[in-house]
Amino acid sequence: MELGIELVPKEQKQIISRLMQFYLYDFTRYLDIQVDREGNFPAYPGLEAYWSSGNNKFAYLFTADGNIAGFALVDRLLRDPEGQFYMTEFFVMQKYRRSGVGTWAAHRLFDMFPGDWKVSQIRANTPARNFWHRVIGEYMSGDFKERFNPRQGNPSQYFNTLNAARVKK
Image (cartoon, rainbow, N blue to C red; front, side, top):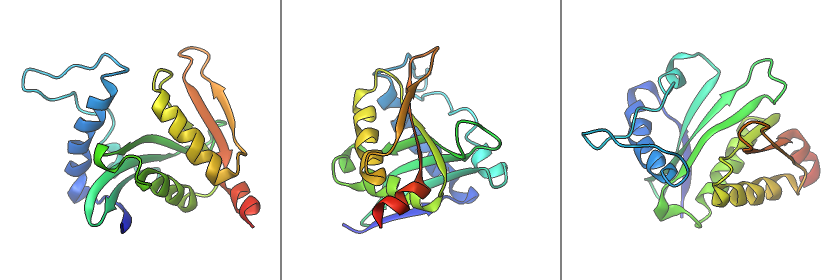
């Protein structure tokens, strides 16, 4: 399978907006999200900022053999003690789950943005937490920390990809 990752230009932002409907559908297991009378989930808040905020927000599309396989939204955190980069959203289409696409895409993003990372999940989303433990664990040779948000109890993993380069040598 030939895998690709590309930054989504403003002219193609509707692709992410449409894929977000599938992403939100997946989250109906964990959050109380409803479709409107026309069958659409609400617009993702702040999505437009990924094309209007300068160099701090990045929308990437993943492909497998030329077909859309998923997307990621990555934020550059400015003066934030939580880290330099945040995996804001990460989605792999059902068809491509457990095929290596998600692991490959996450590792590519970690390579593209070297530094301190934060990746979070909703507490009830055990499959996502298991995925990130495995993916980050492989990339970092187990060198990451996990903390829980004191209010919601959601887990976040913290790691520095610059340390991964040292571990892999």
